[in-house]
Image (cartoon, rainbow, N blue to C red; front, top):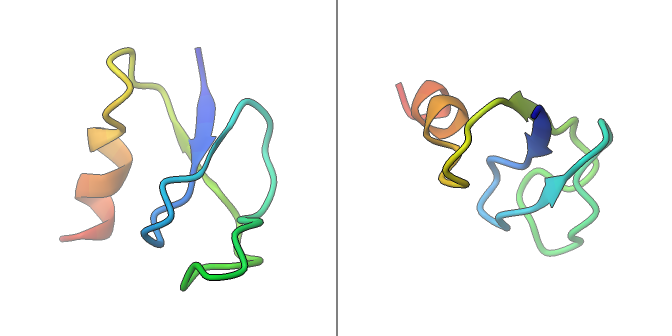
Length: 51
């Protein structure tokens, strides 16, 4: 099931598209990235951000 994660370090996860809501996060207000992982590790999204 698709979900949306923040790659800014706060670890935010949402079931709906949106923006990061963590005020202390480096990506506060930025769009969340779509992820389709099934193990909850979000490796497909996090790996893309760190390349």
